[in-house]
Amino acid sequence: MKPGQRPIGVFDSGVGGLTVLDAIMRQLPHEPTIYFGDTARVPYGSKSQAVVTRFSLEIAEFLMRQRVKMLVVACNTASAYALSALTDRLSIPVIGVIEPGVRAALTASRNRRIGVIGTEGTIRSGAYARAIQRLDGKARIFGQTCPLFVPLVEEGWIRHPVTLKIAGTYLRPLLRRRIDTLVLGCTHYPLLKGVLQEVTSSRGNGRGNTVALIDSAEETATVVSEVLDSLGLKRRAASPPERRYFVTDAPKKFIQFGLRFLRKRLTPVHLVDIGTWI
Ligand code: DGL
Image 1 (cartoon, rainbow, N blue to C red):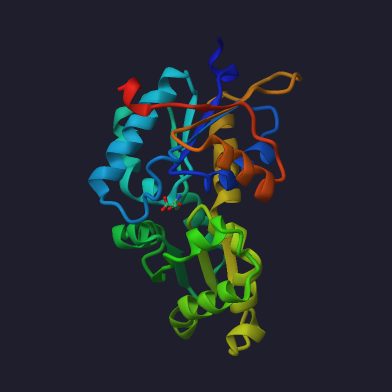
Image 2: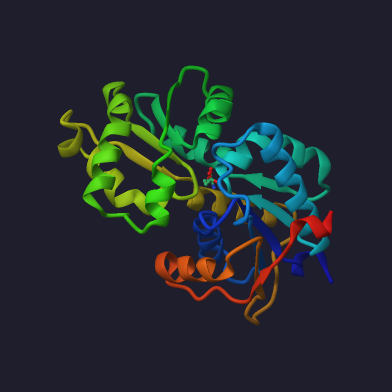
């Protein structure tokens, strides 16, 4: 198979990375894709760097056997902890979600005061802060962990008053720092945009300034497109691309999530025991 015809591999700790896959499918409708959700071992957000890196390398090995032409690390925690290990080991381009989100944040921010929200692992890793400092030494970064957001999204409470209250509590310290840009540094957070917009709007924050929300899913899809272009790896074909899904547990739940949040029937979904591939 010619390199350009091969699929893009996208992986996440579970279902959240479907927000990134969805953006890739919209921006690159002719590209075949393979999505891997590690639903048996989710969440990654509370695990150590060593464990997240090991899981990520196992999944990358599985996807390499599927002959992917590029690896997209849709999970922010895996991008924060394992991107360099993946880049070192793999012979194909590896795209994480952190750098694209950071570039978009620096373009959007006027006062150079940027908030980042994410899992405990992502914030603790300091990966966003390092990436921002690398590109703009004058920018100030304020991080905030939001551990309740992932379960709230998975519960479907995306417009619930409880979620609004929790978002207000999490974001208050960042708003006090007068951020004008907020990076949604976790796969699930783009699904909370409505609530986050309400909390950060000038009416919501009581400070008269609005805050730009940066959705790394869209930005990552744009980078994927640019990299494929620059390497001449875009698929040239008019026929619909093949799409495949692999999960390590609960395929039915995965299908339900796709229907509920992306309004798409994600098939075929294969249940895989990652241990048998190593
Ligand atoms: N996918 C993870 C991330 O973007 C969130 C869920 C988890 O903790 O595994 O960081």
